[in-house]
Length: 369
Ligand code: HEM
Image (cartoon, rainbow, N blue to C red; front, side):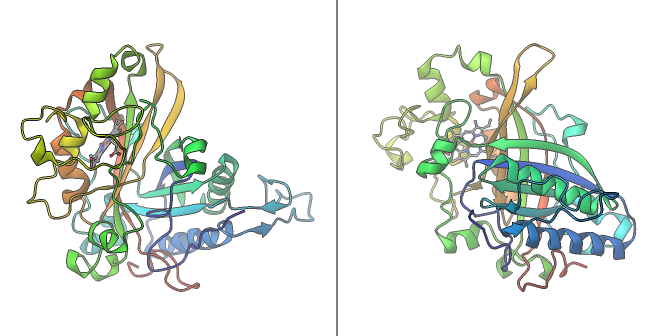
């Protein structure tokens, strides 16, 4: 019954340790009035404060009305490390609310990258809400609660459920994705708060509007895997595509998962191919001062595609204080990588994570509105 504090200068759920379950969902705001947008963000903030703490549930006495706690989970609400993280899309800064001049400088609608086949009903949204917890029922309950309280002011656009292997989370080992590879080894460590300020959180160094301080850019990419093809691919090719061994997660030619390859000792790409995912994603060239991306991805599993193939893949998520230096430049280095034979991005969006509620009575977006 663990509870994660929702308040602080940053929102929870960005550099909080990985959880077993997640829901990513976006909404369009239905009002055109700024005062009602403010009301919506206040309402969302109140629900976050309520849902992320243990509660005794009440059923309500009037059996002629819907019960207050309609998706009741017994008598107690245990958050199970629930975090709810709210971010805003570029569309919120259109003419509706007069917020254009306050738009975070790097916030743009997600463009199409060369290997993308974007589907409109899986893209964008005015608001992105990420729910993370260690049980599925917790994230579902929180989503239903939020919708039942806020549905006069926002409508859902798309929703994707994510998961990570429970045994990896329980053991605090790197989570394995649906390709069977450890995913997160080279991730920037959340324990390094100086690095998190350099990479993830907007600070005065980023020259953003003052209200953005403490926020972060969120890049979400829904990426379908061609698993039937992958499962027929020889191990050597699979490992070369990533530049790491499948079982140990070690860089090719090395022993341990956390061994960091000195690319200068492999200048011709004999061991870790130049085209491998890890070398393209992070070439480790000395000019790159900040050399990491902070990822928070989950696997997804839906139904069967019209082709008869499994609809499974990755909800790729990255948080950064500079969308260009972070996700966009990394994706541009990855364009054309051999791994593209097995993956097809079809949705997602770019958003800006609102700064946290610094005091208990604050609400998300107060600095913006
Ligand atoms: C590393 C999987 C998409 C950025 C890795 C690793 C795996 C992996 C297995 C090696 C282990 C690790 O360091 O975490 C995948 C899969 C993807 C995908 C299956 C999609 C289908 C992306 C995208 C980006 C990205 C879209 C960013 C644009 C990175 C970075 C690293 C990495 C920065 C760390 C490289 C390093 O420092 O060694 N990925 N990835 N990945 N990936 Fe991805």
